[in-house]
Length: 591
Image (cartoon, rainbow, N blue to C red; front, side, top):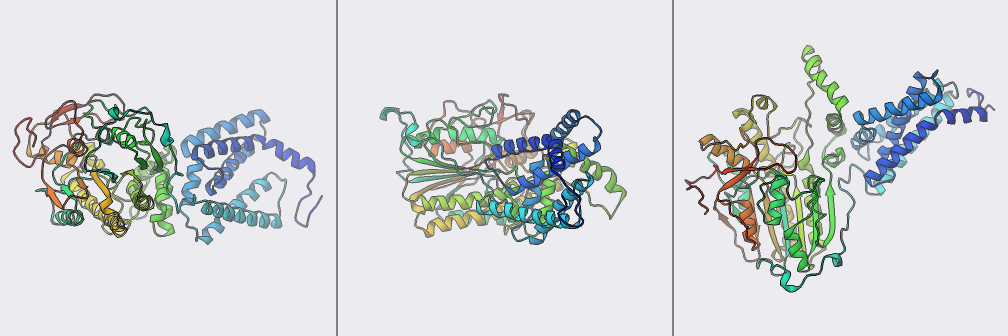
């Protein structure tokens, strides 16, 4: 039958044969879609549509190249190539990178996507000599544009738009009544500082000390002073010389929350980096408190036993969607989306590395050198602190403990002091310098100075967010009903050299230890007055003291280090003295 001039004759046999030849394509695509949707916790999102079309397009191209092969062999090769390509490219992430770069108002780009999809479909079908003609091309393009808009519209209405949401759906974990019953004698007492008030506990990853340092430049000293004064004006006790006993997050935070000092790397985490034991949370749950957790994917704090969780929110920094809403302009969104996508998959990474190493130097002034930007982890802080601020207000009057792990001011340093995105997008400073690392150091003097300048710009932005959050609670009349504890997990780690167990006392190692271990610590209670606490004491010790806990074993002024930084669980940590004290210390002394 012929529908209109320009259309070839079509009959049911053509349609059946067309479907038979593409049955493996459809099955592979649907299986992949089902698996990815299950993993992502969603059924239909805009990037799923694009990913499926990419998969079908690749398989169609393979079938065309292998048209003379037997059907079974052609199907097997198609599936094998698709699976291999997915390990190298990941179709869903590629599609997500594209759509994440588009704001809802980028109508022209959506239309362009539809045209490209429609043209691709038409060319593939026309190549098979089954269907063609200008009217059909127009119909396919129109349908593709409509499908793109419908998919994005559905995603936006469901609250899952990459440009509006960077977090997992809320998880209510463990019914409060499910905690094991304990007698009053078995329940540890809570610190008197709580006195029935809610606790807000925030760990700012890589937040170094706000205390003065001889090496501070004038601008860094000004930023530190401004941050101290902001906290002091709201009644915080600010520790200026606390130091973490651990260099790595996966040791520091778990031991802090459990009032322990383990010498085994990741001892308190399971193989999935889930923290299944949380003494602080457990104590508060036993006294009728309910938990609100705002976490990243680095450590899961929502799997602990005997803890009353009301809600847990997980923010995904490894996904390109987590920062898109903070990036102005389509060009910037496209750049960061695709560079982040590219560095995560081996094939493109190798191609881009070859381009930067071989081709770009031969085209001076014409081809920019590609430099992986790193994930802008700090941008999750905007959403986490916004949600924390709102949650405390919405649950006012309830006994709750709020815990947030915020990856700010952690590198890369992607925002400036006014919280604007640093330009050019993607070319952001990290805490280490790749060229210096080739020589066995983390930084040169020059790269350390440059990194510290950018790091403290990000610290300045952080205190814009903190001040806004505290001001909101004060305006709501909640500040005096909260106990607020905020601290880092280790130092800035912007140092010339990371710590080794063989390090000996020296001016250089003293500065390195302050850079690597000296961490922020501040708290506010209803009775506290704004003041500086200049004790040079372990962060974990101070936290335990604040909540009335004691350690089974004392380690003096030692810190725990590993000479090779790996993520292997169970490796033993070496201990050595902390050399970062500003004052002269006697071995083992503890102020």
